[in-house]
Amino acid sequence: MTTHGTAPTTPLGADRDLVVSVRGLRKEYGATTAVDGLDLDVGRGEIFAMLGPNGAGKTTTTEILAGHRRATAGDVSVLGLDPARASRAWRSRVGVVLQSTNDLAELSIRELVHQFARYYPDPRDPDDVVEMVGLGEQSGSRARSLSGGQRRRLDVALGVVGRPELLFLDEPTTGFDPQARRSFWELLRELRATGTTIWLTTHYLDEADALADRVAVMRAGSIVALDSPAGLRARTHGRAVVRWDGGEATTASPTTLVQDLAARYQGEVPALEVRRPSLEDVYLELIGQTPDAVPESTTEAQA
Ligand SMILES: Nc1ncnc2c1ncn2[C@@H]1O[C@H](COP(=O)(O)OP(=O)(O)OP(=O)(O)O)[C@@H](O)[C@H]1O
Image (cartoon, rainbow, N blue to C red; front, side):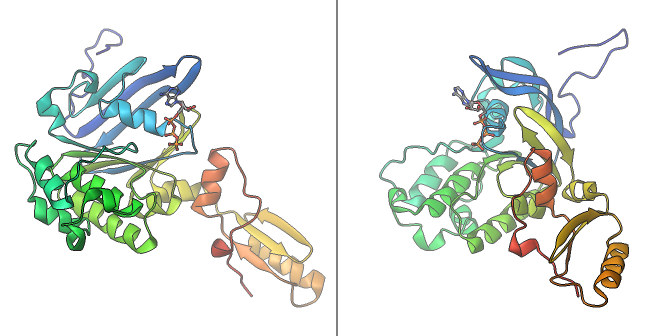
């Protein structure tokens, strides 16, 4: 706990509506600074997403918050406690799904989820949880025999069976087919509706856009933007990209440009496209990369 000035300040984690509070978090691995002075708060019942390229520091931050890794410096409060000194009671309030998966015994899905449920004081019904993650039909199969995406669903089942107040998910939908992702998103929304706070890392823009109340974009150990998906999108400041056979321009007044072009071509402008920057464009700009080509799916042609 740190106090500044003479007036007493609220100790980190004393605000019960804040599930996660981080101030000045740093993590160094030898000469590598993985997390470079992070400040953030996550409110109860929020879905909070961390986006960022490989090596940005998302996993390191998540592991520190989940009590799996020690910070080099900074103050961290998760559910009112420093995770580095967390008790067993604290652990039972937190669900953790990290990238490194557990080594599974020769148990069936159903047996595993039942076994995990016994570690918690007030677990969900394990059979309901197996259904909830869409593994009902495979519940008798050995966990080892699952596909990558099914395995990830099992990880989520093990993370939620203890009825956690806070759920950490590190890249939870990697390896999911599109339909499995959609139903997984639905599951996360249901969990949020029952009051679960969700901390999520992802590489998928559409995932953050579809799910998150707020998104932190991380780059080289720092947060470069922290906003709602709509707030991030608004950073395009009304700009649009106008393309035609012979040129391209980014402008805040595309209609005027199209009128000018129409006058110049005396009618149809060849291969005219007008496109609003997508969340992906904003993201790529934030992390210092610009797309080589505009993806087809985000291209909007207007006559
Ligand atoms: N155990 C470790 N020892 C040394 N360096 C590490 C270790 N874990 C991570 N790093 C380094 O810390 C930085 C942040 O890594 P981290 O895994 O937190 O990033 P990330 O954003 O989760 O990346 P990804 O999207 O690839 O999972 C990287 O430069 C990485 O090489």
